[in-house]
Amino acid sequence: MNKLENKKILLVICGGIAAYKSLELIRLFKKMGASVKTVLTKNAQKFVTPLSITSLSQDKVYYDLFSHENESEMDHISLSRWADLILIAPITANTISKLSYGLADDLATTLILASNKKVFLAPAMNVRMWEHPSNKKNVNKLVDYGYNFIGPEIGDMACGEYGEGKMTEPENIINIIIKYFENLSKNKKLTALVTAGPTHEMIDPVRFISNKSSGKQGYEIANSLKNNGFETTLISGPTNLSPTNGINFIKVNTAEDMLNKCLECLPVDIAIFTAAVADYRVKKIHNQKIKKQEKLKLDLEQNVDILKHVSNHNSLRPKLVIGFAAETNNLRENSIKKLLEKNCDWIISNDVSNPEIGFNSENNKVSIFYKNQVEENLPKMSKSAIANEISNKIISYFN
Ligand code: CTP
Image (cartoon, rainbow, N blue to C red; front, side, top):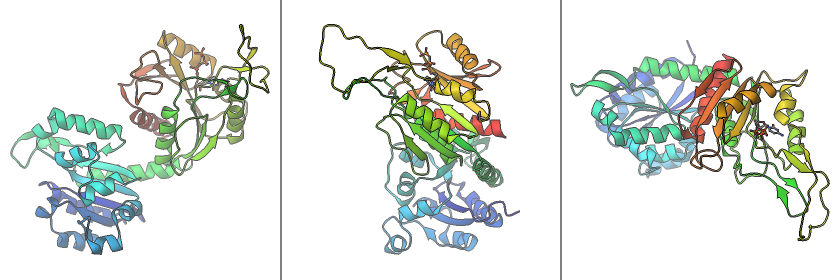
């Protein structure tokens, strides 16, 4: 019964007729053993009273960003750090819009912007508002930012119209949250290794062979896995990115370093190779800077294929090995070839000839090829949304 024992839920209630359902949410959270702190927006106070919330949550209600009382006891940062999870139910079109622009003009939006926690959103609004292109655009933006939507559902509305826009019933919201925490504790037992970024293969003290990889997709995957409870190690070549707290971060320069660090990390349950490892290194690195000359000849040798090496490890092969393929042509054919040659379970491919996706861009469009060669094409999304999709697929695989 106490499926949410010791869980700390920060519930934000926005101003809409569905706010009355939030009282039931608080009752259910408490019944399941969770602690609940509640934040009300200004408009929410017109629909539910602080007194009814305090009686149910057995805690005070927070609603003012600049209240001395609130800030001295628990400011907007401490509130979001206190929580294991933040739920906004109901969330209105107005708050969706504010979050999509990163506005922080009240306690609710400020603490969400400052939050480092999983945020679930349960919208409730009129069907026309939900379907309005501007709202749709904002919703897509929030999905890209990594927020998780629950609903809305189709049904009769308080305004008398019918359609999509009803807030999901409290019991169903609670079940989704219970499932999330269950997955989190299951995933905690699983270890994941992610490689990311380019490698630098030195030619002389100032020059190296490398490529255009920014490392962003790999960092997003590591972040999403960590957020879903996986014990995550990120081995990264040189990038301008910083890993988020909670990730075991190992920085390397060359393909050889990356290989050695990967082998030191084994055994792991999942290994995801997003790194754009330089295929070649210079046989003999020059100690001094090479002077300009008419014809420069570099003697190259091939680096070890880290993915292939790990996926063919006879005793420590991870249970799930995922490779990436950066292609400019014949995506399907080349991806399946890599899947088979490198003995991967999945290959995630992207077309790097298109400058709007792939290297150095915010967005990506990938296809996943499974061991049975079935192909799944995902739509163009932000790299963080792709990372969340991949994490969800990994969670389903282990379930
Ligand atoms: N990879 C690796 N070690 C290497 C080369 C590649 O681990 N020395 C991994 C990448 O991290 C990626 C996959 O292999 O998951 C495919 O990388 P990609 O560069 O697309 O393919 P290559 O094997 O290098 O083949 P090609 O450059 O001919 O496309």
